Length: 218
Image (cartoon, rainbow, N blue to C red; front, side, top):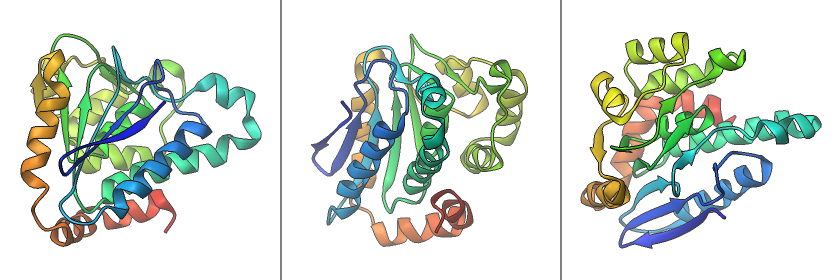
């Protein structure tokens, strides 16, 4: 189950569903949790993470194949999750505890900062290997937050980046040991949480307003 807990002013969303792949139910769960986060009054920051060796292994392709009439709706709702995080009026950190592929990599890219586990896991956009091109909105999300040259390589080669690889090209902002990924993210986020949410929200509107609107359909 994906759950919301609090560490002081920092909301922590933890995915604990094996490979943490996205189907419609999981996407709807994220919207419910983001509703709770957005409703919080006062200082706020958000950290998201996974469990064991997976942050998120992306889309649940088996679910999508078995539920094709709902697939389009599910993908639109997942785009809305990314857009809501990208435009959230507080600082956000992805604590990447393990493998972070496809939709999981896109989720991490919607955050203001990525902290990644040093010893295990890859950040990867595998669509080239899958024969499934990303959408224009997905590419726009990646390049809104991450270096364009790194994203060019990621999309054109399907390279699997370790934490050190990701740090060297600017995808990863900080590397932490396995047992400190979440605490490192929370500590950094907590220092920003008391700052003005109004100003953070306005800066995100200036930087990402058109993309947030495109992702959320607003």
